Image (cartoon, rainbow, N blue to C red; front, side, top):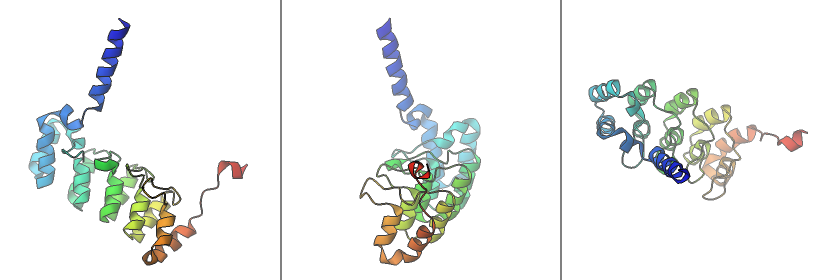
Length: 194
């Protein structure tokens, strides 16, 4: 009996970790297709019938929200967020919607995502934060926005071991960004505060 419980538990874990698209069936493919083709009527119909499709993924693991953000499309991004798309659900390579917005310079989407609770220091598989990506893209407006919402300029990535502050210091074209970061003092450690 104990082994049956273990088998059922493992089977349950396998089901929970299966791709969202497989769990939702063929409608998820139709929904992603509608997002990619910007077919509002089809997307709305599918979401009316199956509201959970809003977080469906494509074959690469990207959600409709990430696809819309990558395309710099404020209408589709807003539509998907209003329909309940998860603002923190990571896609391919672990890129969150906020990291994707930083990567393509879609500052308006970044502002919306933060307003909906997206984590400003969430990392992708390379350990990049939205702030590191914003510095690499030389997007001073987004750097300010992320810092104002508590992004840690000293959190390092896994790829090179550099922080947003380090990347800004290494790039001669980001001196203005480095100045913005330098104005944000590192948080004192708990041991230093005692």
